[in-house]
Length: 301
Image (cartoon, rainbow, N blue to C red):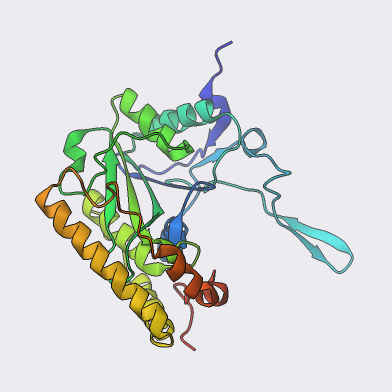
């Protein structure tokens, strides 16, 4: 039986005129090294007034026992319940557990009815690189023209799927524009809150959409985070030596990539033998700073 994707969402009766606006996608649940995508989504919500123009039937999409929503208990009674809602045009929230095909059809239906697009997803991925080098941003898109000026992954690989990736695929099949950005995060920082990664994604969004997106909060948080990391490195000669080794290997890989662009930075041999050692040396740093490595909006202590 064919199901109607429009049964999966409700449009606000007062939906604003947002024709041709890009759809920014961040759904929690898939990989997001450095919490880059989450930081950027929160940054956008903090800095722009917003309203919900579409809401999905989360009862059909979410496994409540594995993604239990928050409830507030006050003294003697349950006071409130926070349902796992998805704001839009920044489509964010937990990645659906169920009905991926119908969900992607629903997103496509919403974009068609509101005449919005392209769809743009963003996240962080761990990479064998030092924090002292510029963060690379890899792009993928439904049309070759959308890739102009961006780094790409020139390999054919199979990876676990995600709802944003399926949305991009379905948009392409429908002749609609969609693209995604993945910022490369030093893998020894992939579990930390790493604002420089969100800042790199913000730059890619700004370039691809022409949107005027503020970056002051993320830039200041990035500077504080980098200073904290440098202090951690300075406290250990062994860690400093391992960082230098990563820098040397990264610079060598970069030079080889410049001579052979098809190989790129993610070619065979990118995995660096000192990565686990470096990660072990940073164990205390990650434990102390995970989820609070001077995130945007926090005060410097």
